[in-house]
Image (tube, rainbow, N blue to C red; front, side, top):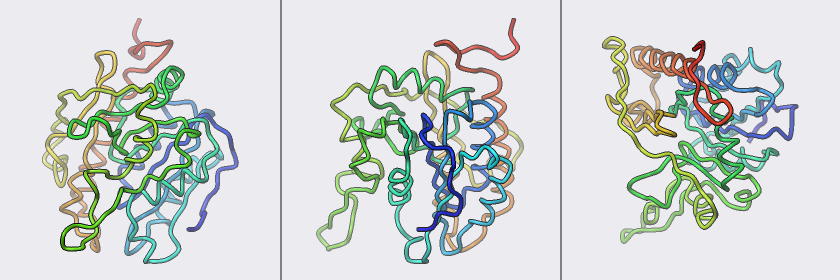
Length: 281
């Protein structure tokens, strides 16, 4: 592992962990949302580049350049091609080992908060609970890694990697659905926890390009009757060839959706325990 950029601001309240795999267009808007609609003094954002076979460190350096004056960004990457083939949980582990914050938020690049000051909301939730995140209907005990918040002291001894075993043909498989993030969730399941419940939500039609390579539906989550965040499920990355550049139409569509969610976050913000409409009288 290499430390490309290291945050000089330590002991912030939150570490926000993002793992990049061909997700540059999403990360642009994740950073805008974090810095425009939250207090930068509260968090360190740590980005781990897992793109293979060719890394995207140079692109991430450019994307983060305007924010690095805040001295609260860390950027990591693997040093070898073999390491870059490791699973998502390995990158989260590396970020967690370096973290010095009170709380740790795993946030997939394609999970967008659509309300402002979401870290303010999470502050209040975590003052009353030991963990929080989105529910996962198929595995109710498991907080999925795409949006999971913990007190760092509760999970630092665990790992974000899946629980692996072997099937009848001796192939390595994930055991009983214990996928990325299972162990931190299991370590805290007997303690107080809040889950954001699933709610219906449909991404807007922003022209044909907005659906290019993206799912027409996604899972969204609510708090206090308001849509809080939405998960794009990697924009159907399952269809994206690993060794080829992302099609430009897909990139354009992801940027349109990122801007849409950023605008939503600017319309409502969390303040003093409730959602308030910006510029409302």
